[in-house]
Length: 143
Image 1 (cartoon, rainbow, N blue to C red):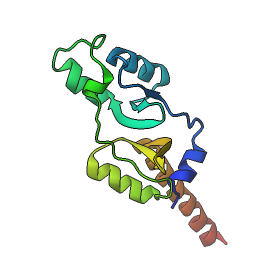
Image 2 (cartoon, helix red, strand yellow):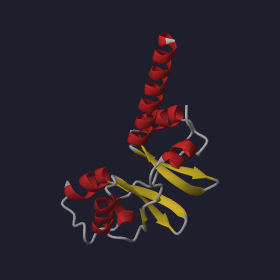
Image 3 (cartoon, rainbow, N blue to C red):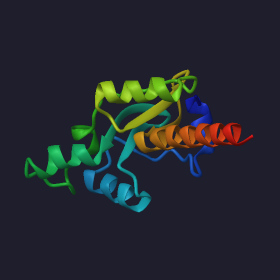
């Protein structure tokens, strides 16, 4: 089972995409669209303040009839951020994400954000691991 550190190293792009809390929701949605991301970290400098997702946008802006060009990210972001250290295994992180109903998990070591993993990243790792095990078993049976 891989650790979050190993998952982050395997990702083709481990950039940390973020916006400040005083950015408009429109600006955040534009960054998400440009990056093809479902969520962004909300950072003040190097400090993690929250996370904003497409889900937050739908629930807090669209459904409430608010204007995304004037509403600030800090007003609608999730400020209770669930995170994990880079030493967490895929299993531990998937359990954490499932328990808290989240799709994006900031990886934080010593109060420093080192990356973000999505549920898709973790599912891909589990599938790759299972396929490797199956191939090894098939080779064992054939020999």
